[in-house]
Structure formats: structure tokens, C-alpha cells
Length: 337
Image (cartoon, rainbow, N blue to C red; front, side, top):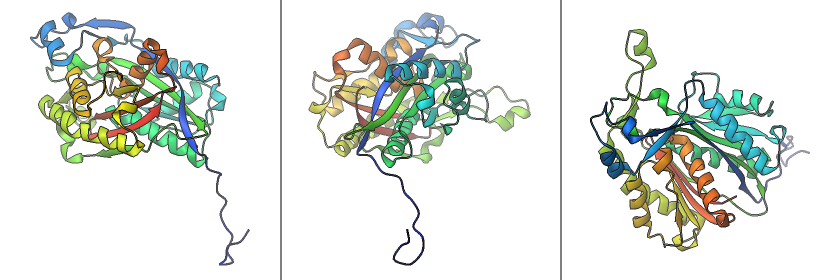
């Protein structure tokens, strides 16, 4: 076929009305680590950690378990719950900051492990907002006709980049993976995403050393944060983005069945709920209490748990928002699987 200019037209794919999350899978670290196991090196107490963060314990993976192993377990559960196999997946997106190598991607290895070869596969490095970024991209791929089923995984083994003496963040972090399968729907099941970044606060959550400095004898790089700056940014700025996500979805807080924020800190979650004026009918994810902060994995892990505890929420609307190192953020309203 030629255009009005006499030049050939490029073919395009048929678009779809919508996309939605079809299923969710999870994998948590095999070791429960209570506060008392961590307080010595940071000269703290179980009471202090509970009051500041709401964390009672966190889960971490043993030495022989890598992040990709957690991702594989979560992905296989999501595939089974969706009623499809790896060969049906058209793209694999993994969000992580704890891959064991700079390259190749964890997604490429995961694709081989779940039988999804030759699906395109790539990693996202957006820390605690990475899962929301992945959902935004999967939604676009499905609606544009580029893919029918997309696997999105948030996975971290943060215990490998923790300094046990660092009082700013070490006691927060856990290990785990959450995975969702996103596929076509007759109407939108994922709202327009509200996402962005603020590189001016790049050093607020950061690694202590660069890879280059290690060649000169620097210590293994670990995570560190300016806790007060992060808290203020999350409470004030991210609450605004959460409201923007509700507006983008065209709904009110009363329309929500659940609120699933990044599990950064229980005080932040509580302040979110207060500022959004969420009614008591909205179930709020509080997975951080026994899982810890798992960065990119925290939202899908929290979704998995909230649906296990409240299966009646399936089909309802959930507001999810991730925010963290970058600084970056991403939010959308989704129909729960």
C-alpha cells in the first residue's frame, strides 16, 4: 500500500483497548532476621527500630541463594496462576539494583530459566520505583500490540550490599522477589502512570563507593541514605504524586479497595494514608513489618500478601506507588488480579 505521497506506508500493529495484571507470584528470603540480631553493630534496640520503622523482622536469603533464584520462583508462581507457560511470554522486564554482574541482564538469564526464549528481556535500574516503571512499560507494550503477555519482576538481594554498622539503612533491608503477568483486557486495567525523577537529589540514597574506586582498594560498596531527607521527600512530595495518580485514573480515594505503597517505612505509609484521606474500607499494605524494605520487590510482594489475606479484594482497584534512589518515583492505579 502506498501513501498519498506515493511512498510505501509502514505496517503497524493493531492496538488493544487495555491491559491488566493477570496474576502475581512471590518469593521471600529463607531466613527470618529479627531486630535483635542487628542492633549490636548499630548501637540500637528492638524498640527503637520498631518505633522508627514499624519493622519487627525482615527476611533475607542465605548465601547460596542469588537474586535470580528468587526471581525464578516468583515468576513461575505468577505463570502458574495466570494459567500460561514461559513460552507464552512475549517480553521479560526485571527491575533490580542487585544483579550479581553489570552485564548481561538478569532478565536474559531469567528468560532462559522459565522457558521464555527468545522473548526480549531487559533490566530496569530504578530502585524502589522500578516495579512501577516495569508495569508502565508492560501496559504500553500490551496496548500497542507489541506483546500479548509480559512478565514484570521486581527482585532484590539487598543483604549483599548492606553495611551492618550503617545506622542509616542497614536494619531496613530485606530480600525477595515479586512477579506479575500482564496481558490484554477488554478495558483498561492499568491507569496512566505518573512517573518521574529528581536527579538533583541523586546523593540522598546512594552507594558508598564506585566500582572504579574498588580497583584502587576501596571497600565493597554498600547502600547509604540521608534518612531525614528521604522521609520528608516521601511524605510531602510523594503524597502529591499519589493524588496525581488518582486523578490520572479518574477516581477518588473512596473508589479504592487497597493502597499498596513501596514498603519503605511504616511511618511513611501511615502519613500517606492520612494525607490521602483514605477511608477505613481501604486495605493498606503493611508487609514491611515482617519482610522489611525490599526495594523493587516491595510492591508486588505486598500485593501478593494482601491478596492472600484478603482474597475478596480481587477485581478491586489498588493505588500503587514506588519511590526511591535517583530520586525516582512511579505510580498507577491497577485492577487487582
